[in-house]
Figure (cartoon, helix red, strand yellow):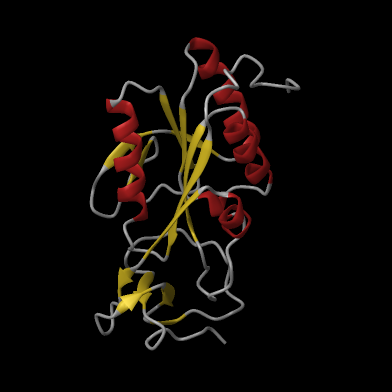
Amino acid sequence: MKNNILSKQNCEKLGWIELITGCMFAGKTEEFIRRLRRYDYAKRNVIAFKPIIDQRYSVNSIASHAGSMLPSFPISSTEEIKDIFEKENKRKPIDVVGIDEVQFLDNQIVAFIDQLASQGIIVIVTGLDKDFRSDPFKNVDQLLPMAEFVDKLTAICHSCGNFANRTQRLVNGGYAKKTDPLILVDGQDSYEARCRNCYVKPE
């Protein structure tokens, strides 16, 4: 891997990190797509990535629960992002990088996001702030103090209609256990947004 894949980037540009976070069904991906499209309309060169593990709606596009779609590169590691970024950046300098579901990527992604921003790239990232156990999710917990802009979105509680900021995992109609795997990518049948009163902490 090259030592400095961003050496040709114009370092005088102002780079920053925008983090969109919250529980499931809060509209994170919808907002993420809206921002990337806005930069695209402004003639910025935009590139987007999504973890290959997330294939709920599309393999090669970032997709929201509401049906919005955005072409993206499916990746499984930070190294893959670096390789694709270097190749695409040589064709045409990249202005904006979008990374969806950052909690599914390895820990090296945080340092790379920081590097991109320091080199003048606008980096827009989405990720769950808490897992189904209501513990901080990896990568997002490190990006929170690092990002220049943080938007924490809330959903509507599936049980009572209150503001929801927790994700409840359901397994076979019951609540997931604390010992269940941390990562389980699925759709509406496996997760619900819950408020603090309706959320049941796994045991």
